[in-house]
Amino acid sequence: MELHDDLILKSLGLQGIKIEYWATCDEELKLVLYARQNRNEAVCNVCANSITHVHEWKLRKIRAAPLGAYEEVWIYLKQLRGNCHICGDRVRSSKVAFTHPHFKNMTYSLCEKAGRLMEELLLRAINSLQY
Ligand SMILES: [Zn+2]
Image (tube, rainbow, N blue to C red; front, side, top):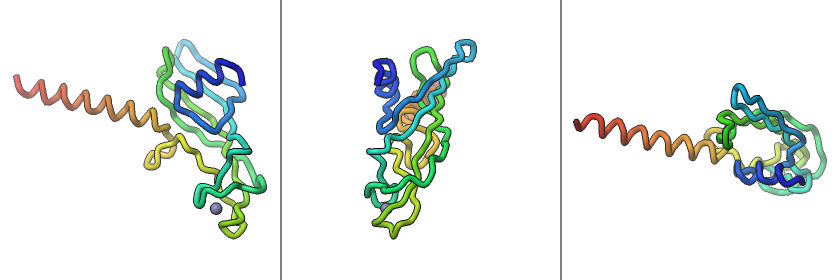
């Protein structure tokens, strides 16, 4: 893994994926990552057992937290779907550890940033009512 790929993954709180390539649009302050789940780390999203055979790679679009000058960050993730022996050989999606459980197309770090911003706005609103 190249140094800048590792830095991007760590900065965005992403694990278990490899960046295949990335592109930026400096006018729109946009960064788009094209990534794939690591085959050897893929586990069933129901029982967390290893996935044995690859059935398909499903493309998902996930919004990530801003990174430096890039205010809008998107990940096009190839998510592995394959057979799980524990789940009766059913085809299951591999678990994506960095997405929020309630907002599945957003990363944890994006949801945390949005939550902090909402608290800040709420406090400003309360303060403005007091004067
Ligand atoms: Zn399973």
